[in-house]
Image 1: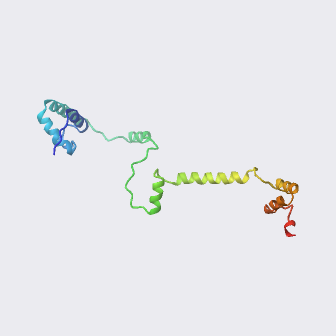
Image 2 (image 1 turned 180 degrees about the vertical axis):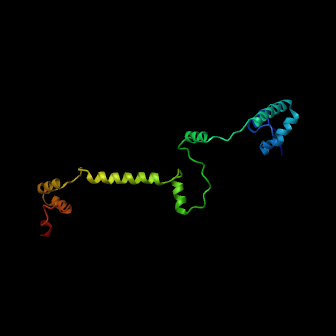
Image 3 (image 1 turned 30 degrees about the vertical axis):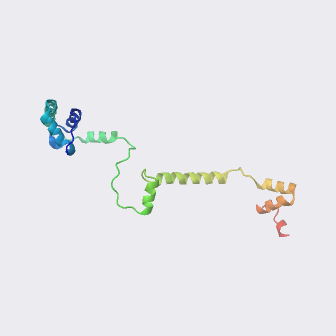
Length: 166
């Protein structure tokens, strides 16, 4: 089944692929050839593309210099994700990790999480802020009586070591 193409679409095909029908998309080649046979405008577009193809074919093509290749590699955008290559079948854990973190290596977020945990534990352990320090526990137990002395015992206050033995 052949679908008809417009002159505008034919111009796009010729601009993108050139005048040679063997380079045109397979699914549109027959329709494009039929349009060339039926339309003088399509033949004119094809003639222009053939002239451009001839000029391009006669242009000298030198191998790129090492300096040019270096400049191009240095100027390429960084941080753009590469096209993923097909990977062999991964294990269940690898598939789970890729489902949770599909942006590359999970080492970066795992490292950031570990660093934040270490920082939180470190800051929490060296902090002078506490709800009940030894001084406040002893003072509270002296003022309030027996109930607060149990709190002091539970906190292993050195001021009340013999009281729990009685």
